[in-house]
Length: 285
Image (cartoon, rainbow, N blue to C red; front, side, top):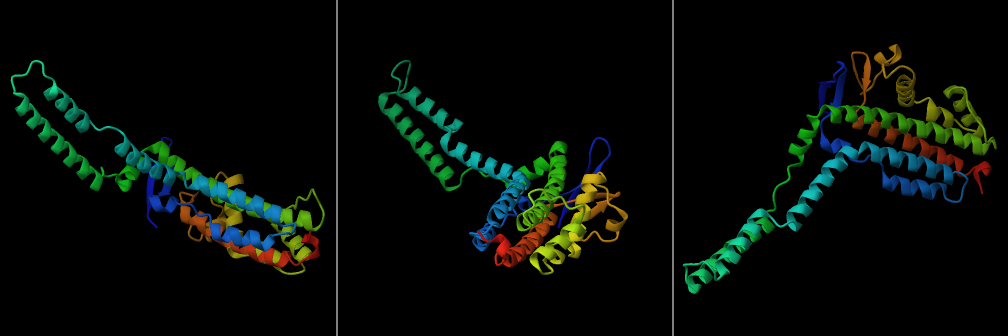
């Protein structure tokens, strides 16, 4: 992973991923289709829809920088092909000028000869452009955006928001499973341990341990808590167990690969939960 470090006007250090391709969508559509098939005709189906909608929306938010560059490239290509370029306007004006019979010392034959040359040059240039359209250097444009302080600040902040949102949606999905399975429309566990125990009881297995007591999930929950309750500053527990997360001057810096890694982990856990849940009478329609 490559990173770029900058500083805001108030002296805050920002660590961002400077690779454009890192900002492509992390959402796995193939997994989503198989997940929906897994929960089809069960009470888990609407919960799965909410989860995927939340994750898809988060993925779209995280990929906006990539969309900006991709859209600019599309606009550039369309504009280059549809807008009459200056050279074409010039040759057209010259052609009309020489075909005008007034105020000319050239003979008609000479003028037609000149017009033929102009038409030939115009056609040659047009063919060259068709074969090799004006270049659009994605990396050069991207580098220009990275030089804009407001843009890099949005990159830094958006990945923190995405990381939190991926985890929020996951924990809400688990909570809703307990709501539906235990027929408790209003269920608010006091902490992750209570939710873990209630999942184990509901499913008659250790699925709660799988979903909430995984070391990587515990780390993600600590990141979530630090973002919400500690201004994004790492706690002492995180300082010694940060995984791949960057901690600079005590602050957590999240990059697209961190969000992608969390998403891939959590989608595996909800798949395991759905595989168990679809067979339980509490979730049958």
